[in-house]
Amino acid sequence: CAKLVMNCLSAFDDPSMNRMSVAICSILAAKISTVETSMLGAKPQYMSKLLSMVRSKVESKSVDITMRFTLSALWNLTDESATTCKVFLEERGMDLFLEVLESFQGESSVETKVLGLLNNIAE
Image 1 (tube, helix red, strand yellow):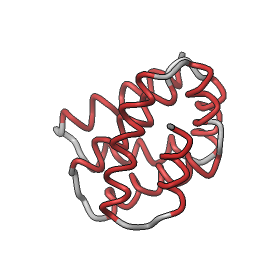
Image 2: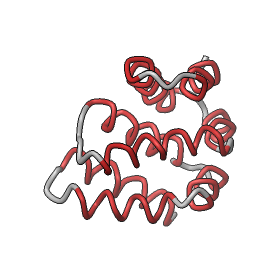
Image 3: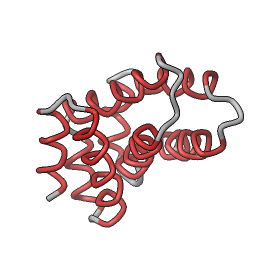
Image 4: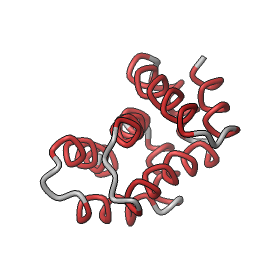
């Protein structure tokens, strides 16, 4: 199910579809096994899509539900998954997330998720 959602996220570039897909992904990533999250997060095309969604929100200076769900999905996908963390770093996620922290200072809903993911990377 999670793979199907990620495929939809990658295949469509519609804001409504992205919002629904990333919301489902965020919820499922917290519910499925570590092995399953690692398999999802290890796919560069999925990571690239999620990071491009975050990048778009940074460029537009927009914190909305899609941004929050995307950050949650990335946080959940990197939890206990060295492979996913490696793909995150290879896709230049660290640079982007430092930019997110700079762009959205004081936005606790953003800072919590970003720092949680960075903690996953550090582990």
